Length: 187
Image 1 (cartoon, one colour):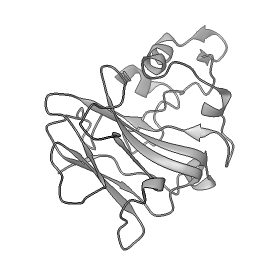
Image 2 (cartoon, one colour):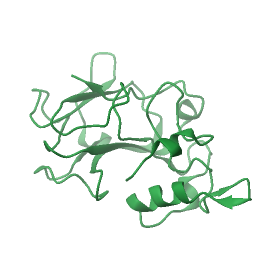
Image 3 (cartoon, helix red, strand yellow):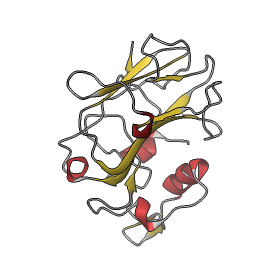
């Protein structure tokens, strides 16, 4: 997926004003129309670099229906994610997904799952990841395991990557932002 600073400046381009997560559907429609007056080609190209199709469920804002995909190519300091470094993502307790959630690392040039030697470059609630005592979940991204076992997604030195937090059937806490994933914090 290609995300640019122009996309981030679009109305609704960031999911959170205090985080790096981009909404690739900032226009909130699958036709990428802005105010009905023009097609936002920047958003359309960025989205179709990472996905071959779209559906109304990807842009609907309805509690418990559709899906949301906060995506980032940047760490908490605004620097591009680098496969040579280690980062930590914290998902606070009670991830607001009625169906399930997942976190996936992608190659930022090809938008395919990061070819990292693991069976899947992702972690989701069905993997039963280890949780912290407060119910939150830490997920580490880096070339070497930080010793946290299955809450680690390997990255590849010399490659940039992007991360998508997928929420299927997003709950109210996502929409009112009483729940927010942390940015990726360089360790």
